[in-house]
Image (cartoon, rainbow, N blue to C red; front, side, top):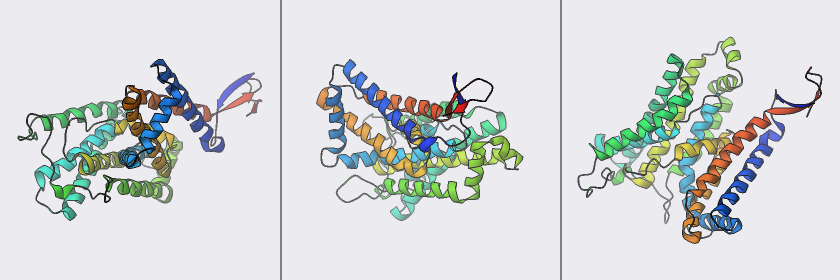
Length: 359
C-alpha cells in the first residue's frame, strides 16, 4: 500500500525540486495559454526574453520592478515565517504611498532633501505598519482570521487613497484628471546617472540583509522561528506569542509601506490612478518562490520583474494581451503551493499500522 504522510523534518534538497517543478508547470501552462491565443509558445517566450533583456535600458526597467517586489516579498516572507498569512501587502503598500504624500504635500513640503526624503520614507513605513497592526489586533484580540482581514483591508486602503486624490488632495491644476499635485522635487529619490534607477533598490537590498539578520541572529527571530514551527511549544516555553505576532505583522506592513513610499518618491511623484498595480499581491509569489529566505527574495523579485517587463513585449511584438503574464504568475503560485504541500510529505510503502518504509 502506498500513502502520503506528513514529513517531520526538512524536505529533501531544501525543497528546491518543488520550486523547479513549479517553474516547469508555469512554463507549460503559459505555453498552453499562448497556443490557445494562436501564438507560437517559443516565439512568445523569446519575445519576453527580448523585452526583459534585449534592448538598452531593459534590465533597468526590470530592476525598477524588482525594488518594490523585493520589499513586498520580504513583508510576506516575514509573516509566513511565523505561519501568519499577510495577504494585505497591497493595502500596506498603498498606505505607505499615502504616508509619503502626506509629508511631502501637506506637512513639510518646504523641507530640504536631506530631511524630506527620510521623513517621507519613515511616514510611509509607519502608516504601512499601522495598517497591518490593525489586522494584527483583530487577530490577537478578536480572533479574526488574518487572511480575511488583511485581504479585505486592501480594498479599504485603495478606496481611501482614491478618496484623497479624487477629493481633498486633488490637484486643482490637473485639468480634471484624478491625482494629487506633484510632490516637491526635494522629496524625489536620487537616481543613478543616466537611468531611472533610484535609491529604492538600494533600500530593498539593505532591508533583505537586515531581515536576514533579524530572523537569524536576534532573540525576536529565534522566537519567531519557534512560533512558526509550533505555537503550542512557544506558549509552553513562555513566549508571548500574541505580542510577537503583532510585532511581526507591523514590521511586515512597514516593509510594504516602505515599498509604496519608494514607488511614489522614485517613480510616480504623486498619488494617482494606477499606483495600486498589484505589487503587494505579487509579493506573495516572490516570497514563496524564494522559499521565505530573505536573501533569495532578491533574485526571485528580479525574475518576476523580468517576466512582467517581458510581458509588455507580447503586446507590441505578437499582439497578445498583457494579461497572459498573469496566467503564468498564477500558475507559478499554484505550482509553488502544490510543491510546498508535496515536499512536506513523504511516500510510505506498507500497511496503515505505521510499519511501512518512508521514501
